[in-house]
Length: 243
Image (cartoon, rainbow, N blue to C red):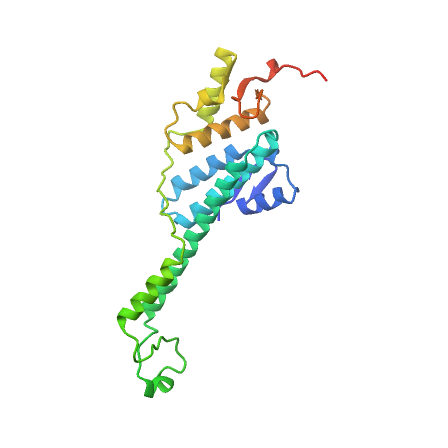
């Protein structure tokens, strides 16, 4: 289990999520960019990380990012994104259950704790073993049909596309890029910042960098309409809204 050390918190990611959901810790005071950097560093020094562990981190990190986004941008409607996040969490959960079931079946096969027996000696030989004893008139074709019927009622578990985090994607570099853009042009749009992004990971890193700069009060954001562009400008140039 990875222990994260950031300002106002030290511990595993699931504990951080519990504290935030119980409102015992303010999400806006937590640097998610530092948490992401620490996990990337952990990946570099631990190349044999199990896919289940990475899936758990993605689920928890996505939930934290969603909570922080709602805290910083309460005026945004994220219904569709929230459903997508829940779908991802459901898919990852199904994937983990599938892996656990595979391990269980492989273990039973390895121990050879199963066999077919005849009716007359079933109780004597298999009294203390977990067994599968089909009726004598059951044929292999019947078994195949039953299996296909069961599988037909199961929801297909989509294969998870393998994603490798590129070392060139760095939150600190994104922060410097945003600062440089604002310094030179005075303001920009979030769509312009991610225009040349080639992966979802790069978009997420850009958004984390934006949140970190908002927390530091280096920049401010504006949105004139519900689905309009998000304008980014220097915090000092943020217009004062009169009542």
